[in-house]
Length: 351
Image 1 (cartoon, one colour):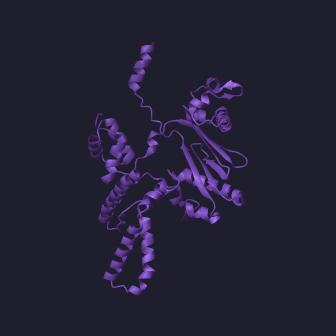
Image 2 (tube, helix red, strand yellow):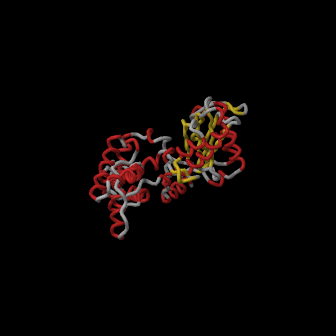
Image 3 (cartoon, rainbow, N blue to C red):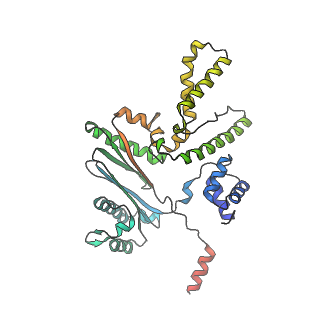
């Protein structure tokens, strides 16, 4: 695989904010592997986490349908070529109809969907007719349905139709209405905060270890700048996830704080008033990855003084989120690289 090319250097700079030479070196060291180059820059404290927006090119809509008794929720992403068509009433109606069809048939893949029958037609033929009417290529790219017999589901799609979330939770029968309303709010939270998993326990251990190195390097780089500006430095964490905070780790932190208080000459009788606050701050400093990636650990956007987990428990302790799906329009679709000269040459060749 080739190493650093001008195109890759430009893309890596846009993704991480790192300098040109650093990007070039990282790409050469990783044989042009963009993902590995991003991680190498982060571990060296030279770049931020990759911006994924650069890969989002498709237009269209994300649609969510929740049935009347909150037992089933379906989300579909349908892509069009332009934003103009995505705002067309015919396209909006198509999106709604396809979402209802996906919920009714239970299909979960595009190829499955093509073989179903809708309004007396094979779906593929039905879609081709819509393409001919609307005048643009249309693809039903992603779909998901979640359901429950022992709780509720709910969902949310942002007003611009570009982000959607569906959630399922178990709960006591007596609180189903409260749980359904809560899930709508939590879905709104997740649409904005982009968690990747429900709980920190769902994070892959290798991912946690990689992020541990990267986040520490990021904070160390920030501290270099803060030191230059004469501002207070941030604490460098030992860990980044609660999954790493064993009883031994907490005990070691407590022993360290006790030693510091002793060295400072603080009376031992007041340690019990000071240590819990230090432990709480230690846990906060050492679970930063959970706050970025785990839904339940994130500060709740409706009340940032509590986590999502705490907000759920306040409504009713029986409510437990068990499924979470988030779609962002075009996520994972690479931008088509336009070569204007080649396009002109191709057009001339046709004449």
